[in-house]
Amino acid sequence: MDVIEVLRERVGTFRRLAVEHGLPVVIGEPEPLPRNPELPVGLYDVFDLVGSVDTGDLRFAPPAEVAPSRRGGIATSTRSVRWVTRRRSARGAS
Image (tube, rainbow, N blue to C red; front, side, top):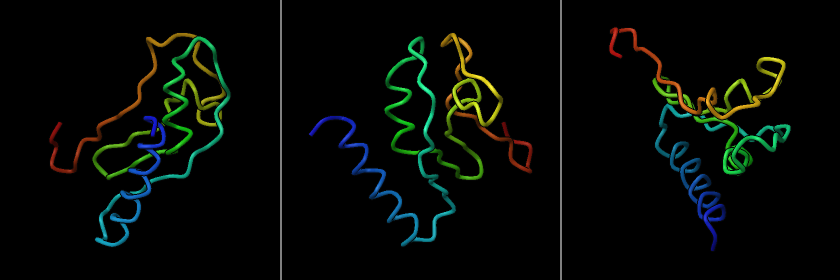
C-alpha cells in the first residue's frame, strides 16, 4: 500500500468517525485543480483526496495560488503557497 492509498483510507476513517461522534469537522470533497509543473506534485496528491478540512479553528485547503476559483490564477512559485491557516478564536487566542 503506497502513501496515497494509506491517506485515502485514513480520510475515509476520519470522515466516518467525525459523523459517528458528531465532531465539528467538515471534510470537503476534492475539487479538480489545474496542474502547474512549478509546484510540488505532493500538493496535488493531497488535494486530490481532500478538498479541505475545517475544524472552526483550523482550515486546511488549497491555497488561493493553486485554486483559480478562489482568486483567478495559479501560483508560479512555491514561496507563496500556504496550506494551513489558523483562525483566531472569539477569545482572541492566536
